[in-house]
Length: 189
Image (cartoon, rainbow, N blue to C red):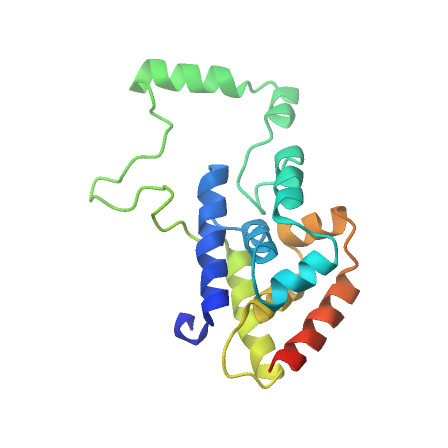
C-alpha cells in the first residue's frame, strides 16, 4: 500500500513516527498522525490550518491531557497514585533489582529494533485502521494515489482514536473538516 502514497502522504507517515519518538511513545497512534498532518504542505495541512489547527497546539494538548491505554499506551501517574501505585517507587524498585535503566528501551536479544528517532515504531491498531481507511477514501474519491487528504479522511473515518479526541477538544467541527477535505481533494485531482 505504501507505494501508492504520494510524497506528501509518505512524509506524513515519517513525521508521525518522528512525533512518536520525540514524545517518547513506543507506538504511532492517530494522535501522532494528526500532528504530522498539521505539518503537511499539501491539502490536509491546509485544511487543518484553515480550521485553526497547528502542530504546536496539538502537541500542547497532548502534553496536558493524559491518554488512556487504548489510544496511546501512556500511563496516567495520578490515576495509578489514586489506587496506591507510585510509578517512581516502582521504577526505583525495578532498578534496585535489575539495575539502572532496566525499564528503558533496549534492543531485544536478537538485535531487534530499538525505539528511537530513526527506528521503526509500530503503529497502533487504530492508526493502522485509519491508514487503511485512507486508502478506501482515495478509492471512493476515484484517486489512484493516496494523498495526505486521504490520510486525514481516514483518521476522521476511524473516529475513535486520540487524534479525533484531540481535534474535538481544540474546537474543530469534524463534519466541516471532512467536507472541506473532500472538496479540496476533488479540486486538487
